[in-house]
Image 1 (cartoon, rainbow, N blue to C red):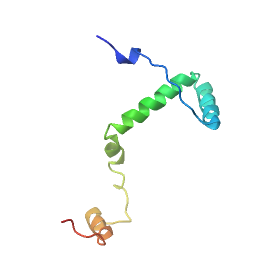
Image 2: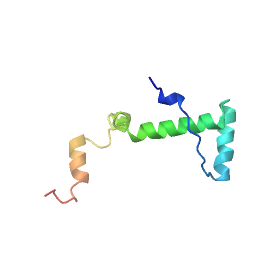
Image 3: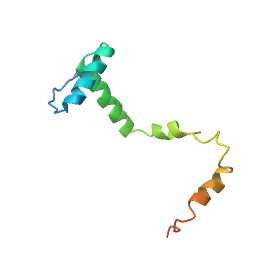
Image 4: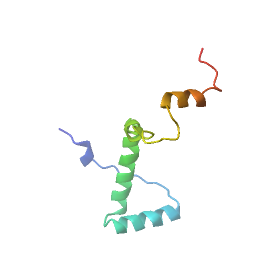
Length: 86
C-alpha cells in the first residue's frame, strides 16, 4: 500500500523576505527545519479548510453571557431589520 505522506514533491515558492526571516526564527525556536514548519502550516491550513471544527470551537461561546438575556429573543431582535426569506 502506498502511503502518500512518504512521497514528497519539491516545490518552489516566492515569499516576502520578512516572512522568510520570521519563518527562520520560528524554526530555530522549535529546533526544526524551515521545510518542517512550512509542511505543518500547510497541513493545518488544509485541515481547517475541509472540516467543520469551527462549529465545535464556537459551541457554547455565549453560554456564560448574562448581558443578552434569552438567546432566541436576542437573535430575533438583531435580525428585525432583515427582510423575510421568500
